[in-house]
Image (cartoon, rainbow, N blue to C red):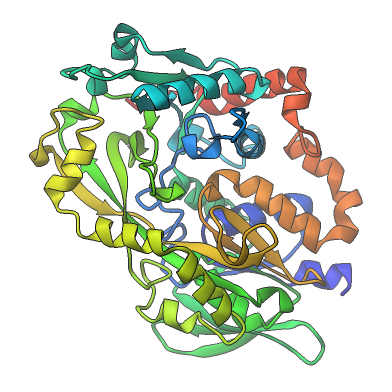
Length: 497
């Protein structure tokens, strides 16, 4: 595959944050490259990237307790938190580069500063949080984090949560003011506006139905216009499958060996949304709690300030749901049709291993509004049902595959990239931290799929992401400099209140 051919025929499937990020990076590296995007909906960022379908946390592992765990010997393992934070720092640097160079403007439309907090109750969990705080603050990535179990301090930090609370058990929280709320839907739309201004061909209302090898070893896409029903076939040298939950089916159609023994399990989410402006005004943070015993990692409850459509919102959740669809706009047959002869053993093994997850999902589906309100009242003691409505969040498809560590049919929690051996096709699967780590993940895609170009491109990548190739935790002066510069560029504008 020649360099020029690969550059001329880049196809991105799905107009979400991942395709937007990959397309933007490639246009920065090779301004003359030709990129075509196919999106089955009528505008970008409508599925997992949409602000109502995405938690918008700006996952930096500052508050998510499921990114740390206590080992049997009593030590605190924060390695996952470190990795996620390092990856989010990459996103911040890239977004800052785009703003400084006029590619994005008005960053306050997609990112806002917001304290990130962890909240726990009960002696055991307070002891866990204290140990976690000690481990994290010993690392320069988490400098500035505070811990308190003093009710008066907590009242200052989270008045809505602490007021009218009967303090019959220990309560503690950590807080760090360098957290953010990110509107990934708005960011996606802004990036696609830029890409189209640079000549990227974006075809909306166009569904990719098949991705197949040609005799020459390239790729041919079968695409259908949803309105005219017209079918066309288009060639490609490099294909990125970034269609959210829909990526698995298209990956399977490529037939690449790497697509075998891989399955997916869909999980939907429901959030409660506050409709009372007086209550919304009393809370200003993302507050993450601890998942209940037996609950999966994606079920960590959180009370989140969000900035959506130019105004402050307040959401609580998620409550898990289930539908066999792989996308909100998908088919009820998605799960069944994803089971193939090469992955049926993997899927059955996963089912046998995850009976507790199945039980949890059934229990969640059966919850009444009042039962959900009772869970909310663990955060807001006197919450009133009339002040809260529901919104169905995006569909997530957790990756199932055979692993050395977990054996056959291991359910993966995270974001995963699968690439062909020749680097001509890549697919993104999985869920959180997803969007927050998009830049890191797409740079990985580029390194895997264009290895022959990396020495040429590396100087430009380092211009966009100064820490590229380094761990910021090992370079505290660079970390300090990057924190200051990204905050100045991205977070110093007029804020939404």
